[in-house]
Image (cartoon, rainbow, N blue to C red; front, side, top):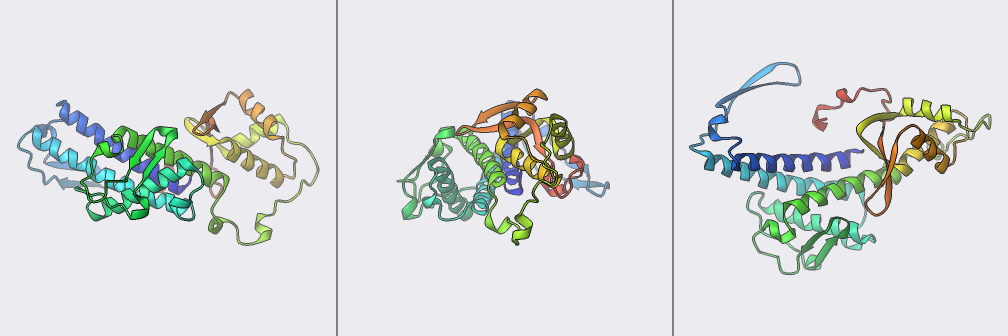
Length: 299
């Protein structure tokens, strides 16, 4: 999963956590009395830092109000970051996007970004004339009818509620992850023809079942939380075979070998296929431990 998709995943998690805190405060699971006046945490340099919490919460109603503001700010943050991730991934105007579901998502976040940029906590709809229409992402039953919203206060019901919005974020995360795996942007392509050319097989040997197992050990992460686009992992496998001077198995045969190893293939969103339980290691650090990822990635 590339940086753009990871950023969308992170802001979705951030919003979901804020909603969970709000629900816990509403039910009295978290109370104003349980909010500490002082807290300590371990920094990335392994030092313990102590910070005073400048909150004066008279009762649980005050706590619910504060957590509600967390939801608003997390929502605004998610709209801005997802818009940026989509713009970095796809070229051209959102209105000219040929895929109807992706067009609905891109246009919705174009409008949302303009809206929350004016006021993060109490936004008012900003809908440019060309965007005053209905946008749908049918894959996740999301709909934003911006025809008459311009200048009005934003309500969750304007786009079907926060549950639908979380589904839209998940759609964008999966779509960006897939499209950046299969078709990188032009400015991310190698600069010279020599860099993109794959060396032909040196010995003509066809990759075997044992080679597929070796590929998994060398280039993949295995775990319940891992998943990868079927076309993306096959392309990586084929490149790996060429670097070894071997002819890769056909994609169908490669898939059969993954199934034989116990991995499952699932169809998600618009019929795209994913292998569950498998993920690609970053090629620049193929043997890095997942626990040593940059701190800002939060993973």
